[in-house]
Length: 375
Image (cartoon, rainbow, N blue to C red):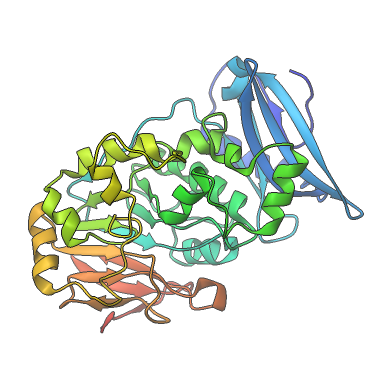
């Protein structure tokens, strides 16, 4: 190990005492380093893992780097800032990253959120208000499921913290018998493929400080990049189909399974050539693909036959998307067969979709349920 400090703990454990107990202990004992304004960025190279934080000392930003042998990565615990000054949470690097399944059957209760776009406060309040996490960012949702339907990056100023929170909750949820689904949206894939038009300026500056192209922070030599590469663009969870944008008529015509759709797309998340050996990828990465499609909500709008065809192909009752704001609240369309979850989080209109035993509700940051109104 090159260096140890209050931010990076590399501990050789002779025995396991339980992840939740360790995390609660760290939350109590660690003092937040107020100089840190961004990070961590976990990068790999030369058989080592490097943890980078951006510090701001009286207006002068610098990079603080800690390194360990890659073989020690599972003993690294990270500390991550939140929207509340002095309040942090801890993250343990995963022992293994595996591709997600495409279908999860028999799921009856889930909370669904989309399009947070780097707004950590909005995400925190929705999760805490609906009893998904507690004040120390521990999972409290038991065996239930959290579904995140893309665009948690870009625009906002706490993207790094949002991603690490999702990353950390996955293992906590599994330990309790629950699950976190993170389905990628167009903005995650844009970040991974060097399309940075919507990246907050601070992140471009911080990448320059680290002497790294921004794309590398989401690439195969970064922990976040490797983790995102395991995620899907579409999933069936219970009786609902989740994808960021929607399923176009052209995609229906492919008659492609969810498993195959995810499998052929994943290798090209970081592609910058736009040259595909499989012609189907030209459709998938176009405006008619599942993470870009908007025609449930914008002209020329899909007709009910197209919606019914998607429901039939994937054997679901409902489609849930984000991507396109149509109101300041979650709304339903096509006789309740499509639910739109994209709302103005940054403007204070934050809501989530609650699915509970076949019933659909919109919930706010206080956990209050309301009926979903049709459009």
